Amino acid sequence: MNTLLIWPLIPLTYWGGQYSVKLIGRRAFMPPLGLLTVAALCPQEWNLRLVDLNITGAVSDEDLEWADLAFISGMVIQHSSMKEVIRRCNKAGVPTVVGGPHATSSPEKFDDADHLILDEGEITLPPFFKDYAAGCAQRVYNAGGEKPDITLTPLPRFDLLDIHAYTHMCVQFSRGCPFACEFCDITYLYGKRPRTKEAHQILSELQILYDLDFRGEVFLVDDNFIGNKKNVKLMLPELITWMKEHEYPFWLYTEASLNLADDDELLELMSQAGFHSVFIGIESPSVESLRETQKYQNIKGDMLGKVHKIQSHGMEVMAGFIVGFDSDTEDIFERQIEFITAANIPMAHVAPLNAMPNTQLFNRLRLEGRIEGEWEGDTFDFCNFATKLPALTLVRGYRHILSTLYTPENFFGRLRDLMGALKGSSARTLGRLNMTTKIKYLFPLIGALVKLGMLDKDRKHYWKFMFWVLRNHPDKWLFALCRAITGHHFIRYTEEVVVPRLGLLEKELQEKEQLLLVAAAS
Ligand code: SF4
Image 1 (cartoon, rainbow, N blue to C red):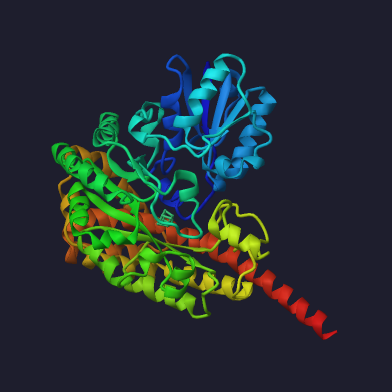
Image 2: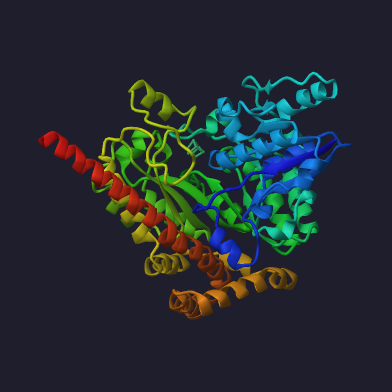
């Protein structure tokens, strides 16, 4: 059975890193781990071919002629590309099997797919394979609430990748989160009881990446890495040993909740294992907004102090922030900027609140009759519900936040403060990289810096920053270089795409407001 595994296009976004990816001569940011796991679950005799549209741009006619079957996965943001891929497969007569988080949340949007494999594939793929072989495959397979034991999940088929086309690799240790933030769909998709793999699985996955000659940043794509602290603490000592034995070939980062700061043992273990960054959903400096969205774990204690504590263990905090909560007042925009600046967070992902399907937020707003549209996973899908703050105030404030945070001066200002706040492992770990890793990984990075330093209109900021790092934190120069390159994406994307688009939206809303005023006056 010739089978295509197709990963649709991810449009330009903050986290897509497209500007930086280009700069270091790679073609995509991160591979589709879900599809690589699907590949591992496929019958061994099947011939598999991975097509990542973020690398190839499109599915070729030759691929479609070769294929007997096409698996397509994706997130909400990939919706239009998923639909286009399904259309092409249908036209070419290749049966489609659609799954992944978007199809699981909104199966009704995929009437054009031949088969829908919903929920986690470890449960729903085996019966599909059996029925398909017997010629009686059903249209929809779901897990009926059952969650798989991921200690039995096979090793992802990293061998199918063009591994050097990507800037980052990813592995996964756990699924699920014990918290219940109102806007989040993770507990719907993966449950409230975090399930973990065993240490030997993660080490085998890292070993495969190592043997395939990948060096650099590896993202542990867990919903909340510390959701099951007991199991994480059992795994980390083995990871530390592996990393030491292999001379720290990877720089690790992950997603976790802010209560990481309350656990000194965990902080130290992660630091020793070589985690240099952690993404945390901080969401808002407003306690009222945090309470409204049931983010109680962020209310206990001093949030700013907790961020600084994580940084003091050598881990950068990247963070998500949201505007548009019912409890937000007009000062929220300035408060967000002040918090992000005081917290030394160069990479802050600020987004308008949106109600995703199957979340508590969606259900509440639907009962209140406030849902006004669908969320399509884009930063510019401005709140899909009637907000308490006027829409114009929100758009204006949101634009103000982004255009303030991502000027070169402010980005590098926060990055400088972060360099001072980071103690310990990020410096130690990056300093311990062996020579092979340095050569493989550093040359493209240095090439990128030269391009930025010669050709970019903000080149003076890059040079100023790098010389400052060499003078003040010479042990952190590599980390600083990586972040300067990442910053290029954030700065350019904000300036060239985000701010102009939000400006247009603001103008549209202003015109609408004026028309309403005229209508009311006449
Ligand atoms: S902590 Fe993160 S993953 Fe967990 S429910 Fe909240 S937003 Fe979702």
